[in-house]
Amino acid sequence: MRILITGICGFAGSALAESLLERVEGARICGIDNLIRPGSEGNRGRLRRMGVEFVHGDIRAASDWTQLPACDWVIDAAANPSVLAGVSGPATSRQLFEHNLGAMGNVLEYAKQHGAGLSLLSSSRVYSIPALAALPLRVEGKRFQLDDSRGLPAGVSARGITAEFSTAPPVSLYGATKLAAETMALEYGQAFGFPVWITRCGVLAGAGQFGTPDQGIFTYWINAHLRRRALRFIGFGGAGLQVRDAFHPRDLAGLLLAQMKCSDAAAPRVMTAGGGAENALSLAELHAWCDQRFGAHAAGSGDAPRPYDIPWMVMDNTRAAEAFGWRPETGMAALLEEIAGHAGSHPEWLERSGL
Image (tube, rainbow, N blue to C red; front, top):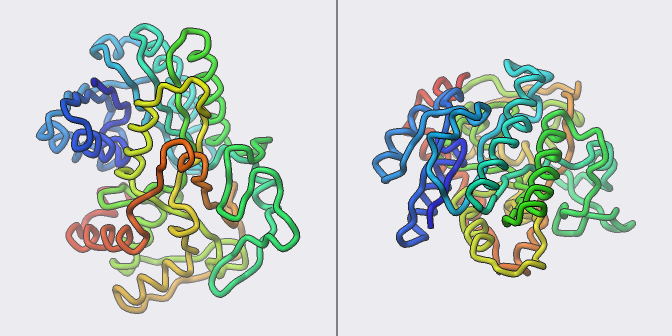
């Protein structure tokens, strides 16, 4: 099996490459990356030592695709991953559009040309922000907890958000680009006869992630706490009650591989995947873990919300479990310890991540 991974020098792309090489005998992996993300250059040498064929190119440029060999599958892991992209930070709205949606045309034309299957890594942020803000929640200890005592809206179970949850706008500019890319991928696959799988991922986390306050929050918070950087709970009363689940890309690799091997044309093509309720923490709980691990470090508080903030997001893995017997294998305790160990060994990591 020959697999092309876009954005291969990013955290997810490089971790997927490593895991797939371990899981698939005789796998050959090619990757393309423009290396513009701070820290991504550091993964290039490691990938080459693993035998990955690396192409320095930009997937937004059609001419750069001519450098790539024919492959059986494409894993599209290239994107601007921040929900604030286009409204805050260095990336403009035009750059967000070009990276996350415009480039998808080149991905799809490549799959069409070579008859390659496509695995699109999408996001939990394709869901309606007003609908997420309206979820029935209660405060339980240091976190928001889903309150199912009065029933739950469509697309929500006690285990989390499903693929059927509302995607009505607004979903953020970032979410809109990912949702539009999903639609185009499914239409191309139907029109030109190649398989398409869409995985709406929760928070990916692990050692080697380039964490920032708006993307990779578990990695960022652990590194910043260890370095005694200023930390602040923002919005929702300023108490850090907001909840996210997390899982490792090596666990995601198992799901993607099961999808690639699936020959059932009737299998659902859009799935949610994340840490699930077992791998979910509030920001306050994460901070308490850091206090215990590294020593006390006070966090500030600010009640003013940021654009697109939501109080609770946990992914329901039921569909992936029923279709493929998949569940994340790395528990939250192991995930946090892995990140902490890496943070201790790389005192410069926040600077490498561009902070």
